[in-house]
Image (cartoon, rainbow, N blue to C red; front, side, top):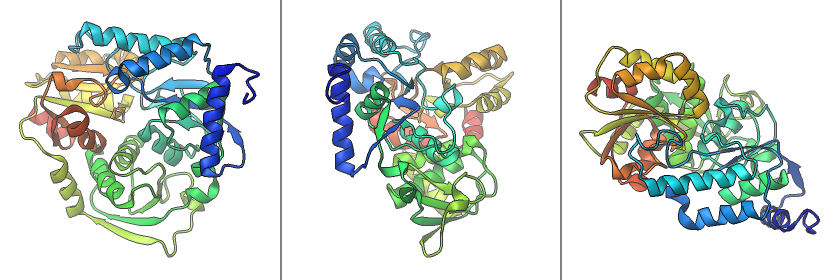
Length: 383
Ligand code: F3S
């Protein structure tokens, strides 16, 4: 590939991977069986990104492994109802078209593992979205570094990634033991916990104790928040995540999280007062979360708009179950393919209420929003 026997596009991507491998001291390339590419929203990549992707597709770039996309800047079907302009929509569709030409599955979601791209334990993959990277490494026990848009695309086109970082056993060991002595009742509590711990441990690996029970929805919220406030790409939870029992924790730096730490996170992440809208589904909502939301709003009438962000695959199942209908009847909408951070919501709202630690951390910078951060039950009651 490097010698150009498979064409210039493949050679260029291979050069990128070899350089990356050299920088990090990788001894070889590993085959990857799943890729997730970021840099999909027109809001994030703009015209230079669109032109690069079109050129790349034109030159014959084709993926050779199962590859999904991160969320786009709009619902690819219901963008008009979301308030997206024609020009933005046309450019976003052109980006998706370039990816389609490359053979990428045009499912735009940060939860590929809930939408048909589910790696197995110890499988080597190359994913880019930080919350998905955290989920894959921690909850599934697959192995991926936090890829950038270009390196993930290179992995998709070559089917390879350099063997370094979290692909290696020695880098999956924890650095901190986090003893949680606080109540974790809501998804938002896990987001608050993740926000505190991510700030503290930065890009290192935490090992949690004292979490008696958590669903995969809770864990996806925890990982997303830690990846946003820090750069955590892997964590372990005692008696819960698949590699935890393999880890030695004696002598690691301890950190205790108490109730007041979570309250501090709620206070720090809340920068506004009266929300214009409630947006949930960061990371993209699971079917179980949609069922809960539908149950909470069924037969009620919300005074404020509600957006539930999810993948197209989950939305379609929810539609069949009548859940979307219940949410719409209450005045909400289920938004697929996009989210509150990568869609241009700054043109629509100025204060957004969320139950996600990650969204609360990103909305002020990415979308110029004031934020109300609380648990979803509270937010919906207020709405
Ligand atoms: Fe996903 Fe958007 Fe949150 S990409 S993790 S819903 S910021």
